[in-house]
Length: 111
Image 1 (cartoon, rainbow, N blue to C red):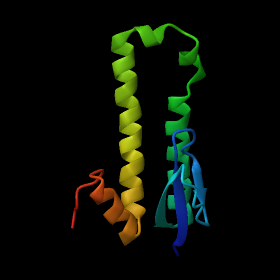
Image 2: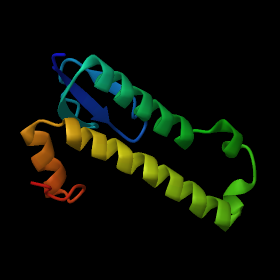
Image 3: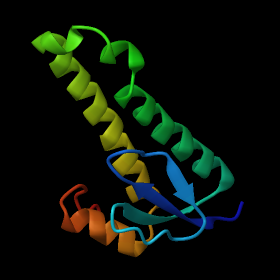
């Protein structure tokens, strides 16, 4: 199965944008990856899950944010999701993407 080039666009508002062409938007961090159709779909699903968790409407209209135990557990869950996103981007990333993630210390050089 062949791989295609995709651009994963991350920004503070939305994490679910993967495109076939670079966006070149200064507000986004863009990572180039090479993925099969199945890998693309899996990454898209992961990004949507992390985005959905971050914006869970049920938590926006409750007093859960005053509960430090809940807040800390929520932060850990969000961080686990983000870590998985970056691991996947690293695994699928082009050499330039891998180097960029290593330079900002998101991933250790595994070679």
